[in-house]
Length: 169
Length: 439
Image 1 (cartoon, each protein chain N blue to C red):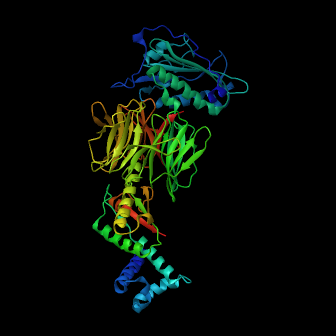
Image 2: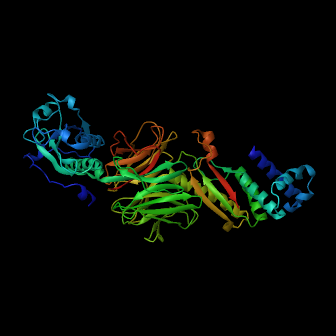
Image 3: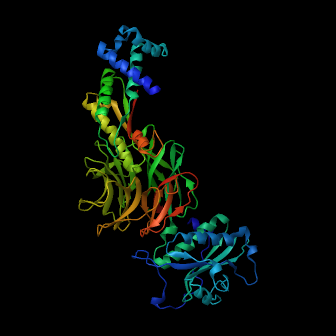
């Protein structure tokens, strides 16, 4: 449910950016669209408009993970698309710092997986840097196979664990 | 020195009986095949005729017998014989030649007979004399005497005696003079522990709020280095055994993987300073001394032979992870593993001749052994589960590894011959990443 909620906010924001070209024009969006935004804002009483925009950007950046094939740090087409959206948000919010976490499934051995997790995080960082985000704003950390999302021993589960997660602040 | 506080060592009690060189019982643990030796640990006896073992407190004689029995069970070239199988009963008639009736044990196919003679001592458990005889010739292989003050000293007495016995038979007794460091899961955290190589005296070394990984002992057994991961990122830790102090440092780059001691006593570690994980050698102050191996790909898990000529490591420079060996004198890198698409976690034997590593087959890791001279690779472990993180013993005979063959990860040992793995008891919870060091 939370993911759908976040997705909705992300789609909404993309729509707003396309329609208005600037996140600050939330107040001029249609009533139906602005309702969900104002609900979020309502929970964040006392925040300035800039702070609200920053919080929304953080939420959107953290919303979508990217996934990898076994023993691979190659970015899929879908991952590139997700990263492109994150790059735009990072550029629009220059005060944000991003931490990219690289993760692996349990099948590899621990040390190699720790290196592979770093390569996965680094692949996303390099893409964002090439997309115009200042590399000094992006940190990477590899968790190898230490923090699985899913603990079952099958491909459906392993494929969820081979991922990059994004933490913005 | 510690041992000297507890025990008074009385050297060999009896002179060996004369035996021709060809008659001497030996085991070549490095040979192509192994001789099985039938061993009987005889029931303990009082040293004074007519005395009773009941005078020795805390059931020490039987406890020591059990420890020796357990220790011998770790040696795959020993086949333990039950006293029930001895013609005429298990009691040897005496604890020392010439009172021992070797003929009965010879008829029961016993090769080595171990006897124990106890005498109570005020203020302690007692004095014990341990002897191992070659049954065929009646030759004394090992004779030792110990004064035992407390019950916790019994496993150490057993280990000392078994080390001497193994050394007398094989030329190497380091298995009983070595320890294992390993990582145990503690909820979301992982801590470093150590015990003897037989799993005795398990103690927790760290209590850190994060994940400890890849412990490695210095060659003198005094320092332990490992990688650490928490919310703030990766760091390198060094634990001093003498002071029990922990030194923790951030390193350049975001990642610290597989720190290990080189033959020279320096630390080699994988860092990602240049955008890819490469292997560096550190100065004593943990600054970077030099690059040991660098490529566009992942280079990780270095391990060194005792002479310091060879470094094995994992690299995916050819598309998937394989084992490579770098000649540190010439700088030439050669590929070690050719079979399969996922070979990781190598450990090179102290003599630099063999490399053991994890090979992924059908989703599970098995230990494989590569002979560097011939290039032959062969499977060393079989059965269910994954076998990972192999580590050679200092004598180059045993190999410790982590396996989930029982359903959860625990530490096992096998030998370079691929003998049936034996569980090392490390207590409740999962155990990983064994690293062999000196006791």
